[in-house]
Each structure stands twice: as C-alpha cells, then as structure tokens.
Image (cartoon, rainbow, N blue to C red; front, side):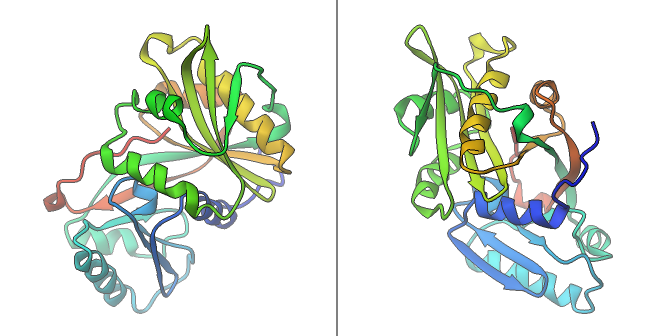
Length: 260
C-alpha cells in the first residue's frame, strides 16, 4: 500500500505536539522546546519544525541546553526529517549519542476502524486503564503522572479505551483526534493475553471513535525495536511514514524510552 495524498512530515509533527501536551513550551528559531516532568520523550525534548539552514545553530543549541539546565532536567533533542542541516553532526561533536529510534506509522482510518462492544470509551483514564498500562514495562512514575495531568491540558478531543474480557480489563489505548488526523498512544495488553490479537482489536475500536470525530488518517509512533507492536500496526494496514531518533548526553544517564 502506498500512502497517496498522505499528510506530510510537518503536518504529522504538529499533530504529535498537539496530541502530547507539555507543561512548558518555548520557541527558538525553528525549534520548539518542551518540558514536563521528565517522563515521555515527546513532551520533554526539543525538535525542529523547519528543515532549512540555520546560521545560528550552535548558539541555539547552547540556549536550549541552558533552558533544560535551568529546570534541572536532562537535555533531549528529537531528530526528525525536519532537522536543519548539520544538527546531527553538531550534537555528535558535543558528545551526544543517538538512540530510541521510533517509527511513525500511518494509514487511512476507514480501513482500520471497527466498533467493539467490549471496548469501553472513557473521557479520562480510570483505575482499570491505569492498571493495564502499568503492565507495560516502560511506564515509569513520571510518565504515568504526565498521563494523568495531560487530560486537563488537551485542547482537542481525546478518549481512553479499555477492552474487557469476562469482566476483566485486558487491554488499553488512548487516542487523540485532531481534525483529519488521529494518533493513538499507550497501547498495552496484560502479559498473559499478549499475542492474541487484542492489540489490533482495541486499535480498531479507537480508530472507530476517531473516525466518528472526523479523522481520515490514523498515525502512531512505535519504537523500531518493538517487533510485536510494529507487527501489530502492519497487521491492521498501517505503513511507515518516517522515523525519528533522540540525541542525548551519556552523562545524563537517561533510561531508554519505549514507545508503542
């Protein structure tokens, strides 16, 4: 499947910034600098929205580093196809290393959406939703707190979905609808129910809700080394649009991020 007439990288990057709110946001040239509690990388990193030559790049990196230092937070740069030329080399020269490669998956939503009577839609994460997402190994305390606080920060429609079997919550997901785009996050299945198709099933239920909000495209961000989740996205018809990585400093000793 080719992604004809698909939204471009700039549109998808802006959708990501909307879907994952940050408590503090600043702009420096073509960069957006975001921070929250130091949990998820997307809300705690600087990234470029303008892929053009930046004559002030080195000074800009200095300022961005200073902004995070003033908050007592480690520095992360999220490197996308919208980087200004030379960013990766400049960061490598300062001792940064790349890691946590992430794939952006994308597909028309109509071919994925499917109602599911066992999936319960919520306006905010409840105890069942939080319990299932806690089974995902990457859900550290700061990241979980960011999820709860982000609910009241959303400026676009969002839903939290829990799939039940025999009265027990077994899978969860969250989904954000932003015009013609919808992104989903926090896909988790309890360990004893994994690899049974529940991830694909709840993804379809989330897409059904988003399509009712007017979304035409569904996107997701998944760690490239998460083979099970990548396979699940492909199984419902999603295809790779592009990739990004994070640049971090070894001395900050940041734990690896896991997405999707």
